[in-house]
Length: 213
Image (cartoon, rainbow, N blue to C red; front, side, top):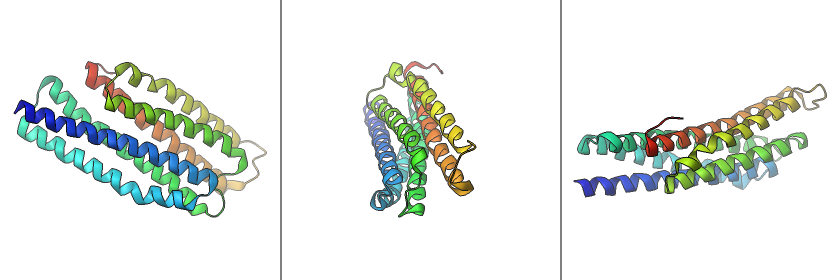
């Protein structure tokens, strides 16, 4: 029974790594669509969102099966329950990448963001990618110290979010309300993407150490 439990837990862990890698790739491609008006990239992100949802369902089913059949306790229970919470954060990250891609597609063939916003969105995308890369690493090889670094990365994202609103609310903003609303929503998508990654990092810390941060 113990060997079976470990084997099932390994499968769940690999599914989480697959999810992390998928949502990282999705946001990278969604950003490409956003900044270059790449219709194919946007459509690819949207088409593959179901794959992330399917991985989430697999984690959900396996976790509940483990709880029912193995009745884990102590650190094993913490690991199993945390896997379910991690999957929920990763699934939401995939949804947010999908939102970015849909915004890019809605504006096609024009770029979804004007020149004044390209730098800040490029920087937000780089922070999001760095965060997503760390999540994939700590899920593949649990590392509480690396996971704890995500809070600092999130601070960088929050600063960029403030920069974005400073541009959108400036007196010389030339593009009108509709473009400003799109910019605000896109900023929120990247900011929330980072927030869910930070949540995932905190769950890894808890899984490894039993402590919350």
